[in-house]
Length: 326
Image (cartoon, rainbow, N blue to C red; front, side):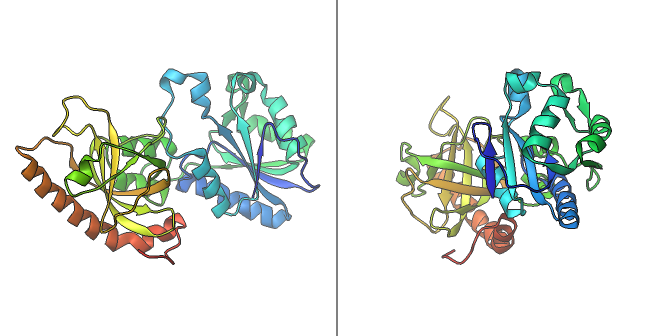
């Protein structure tokens, strides 16, 4: 897959492209429907499958005080687009210069001059350009003169709309099951492992501490059952703790700690992926450390059972290879 950024000076080989446009954060089932429609048009017109996406999220430039948390990193988004068969991704840097560009200029510069669009596929409520003046209607009006047709995909859902906003709301409420229903797979964190105070190891439950990017949306503090993918491609059940460890600190830093069930691997400096499967319990302070340890044993058993039941299905949904040890 070709990833084309603003500072690239390349030119694509001649030929038309079917272009889907959007942020595509999370690549949820609604996004997948837009991309599937674009794939059908590309096949019908023997065109390349292209996507225009934006980084950072437009709200982080236009209204940073109200910008939403992100569901995934740009790297995860690009990998997901490649798994879906996209051939070209034009990553447009959303800064104040882009925010000031007119809709007509953006269409001429990116869709026509750079990607030779023959079809443009967007969501029904798509808006773009300075002051959000561009719309599906304006794209359709411009299309015939510029050589492209426009397809608008209506909102889809299973009783409520599939959207990135719905995924963020579900995660923020701790309902990772609902988030998975909209995404089509469990939400996944990817982050480097950093050193901690080794308290988990002292308690008999060593953890990998994730340096989760600050913009990633988080669920409420608590313990979650998960499935982790290690750097060697193998997977393991995981008990994931998010919070400030009230058993030991009055106001400690918020940490993301991952205990790999039945595995003890040195991961410092490596990157770890964790799929959140189910909320187990909230964060709490116990009467004694022994009581905490008893609860942690229950958390590990529950995580092993939950991850074991869905490991193969989850790995398949996420494109994880289970050929290695699990």
